[in-house]
Length: 156
Image 1 (cartoon, rainbow, N blue to C red):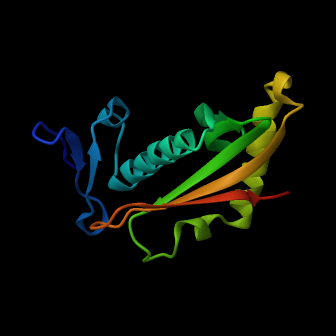
Image 2 (image 1 turned 45 degrees about the vertical axis):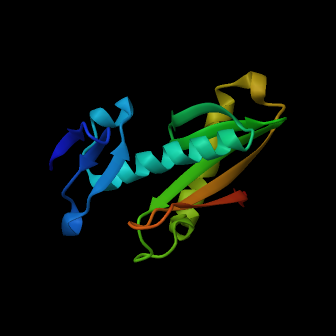
């Protein structure tokens, strides 16, 4: 797979993958290394887009890619007295359905367990209410990205 900077447009191009998939991303040091596939690049782009979206909506971003024994939480944010754990799903087409349909019951269990584990490590935040949201992003090749924010998408 070729990873090369494009000095003219200041973005990185990731080529290869299934059916010659490519992704072009505005340059960010986070993408420079350890990016192995176009799918991973798209996922990272989606997480960045979701973080920007939440920030514009007034959320305070507390952590990205929070690791727990039960899995990773894409984004942890706060809005007032509520903690929000966010799962970001990004797709470049609807060939396999809309992004939010990929949250299986097993994934929901992992999200709940991950959120509870994250909170256990931070006793000062135990008094806050919390929820799990999903941000579904569609990024078609020749159209503007579409962001769908589903609040309280996962309940236990």
